[in-house]
Length: 79
Image 1 (cartoon, rainbow, N blue to C red):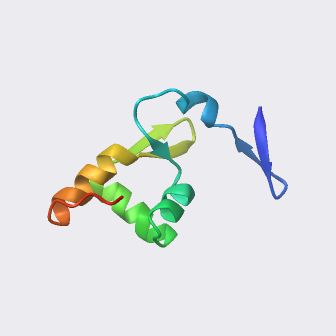
Image 2 (image 1 turned 60 degrees about the vertical axis):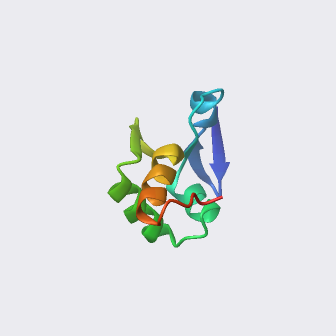
């Protein structure tokens, strides 16, 4: 089943990542979660190597991203 967002069909990725131990987010959700500009978050995720391609979409592995951020910010994890 697909979700509709302003007349655009958006695939329901929740059914694929539910119940997984790792945390995943799309670029838009991750940018809001970390209070970053969309493109800044995309660049950060690419630098961290946290992108996971899923069909035609990209999900960001938040665990990998947090590890990358903790190594490059003096060891403090973003909470």
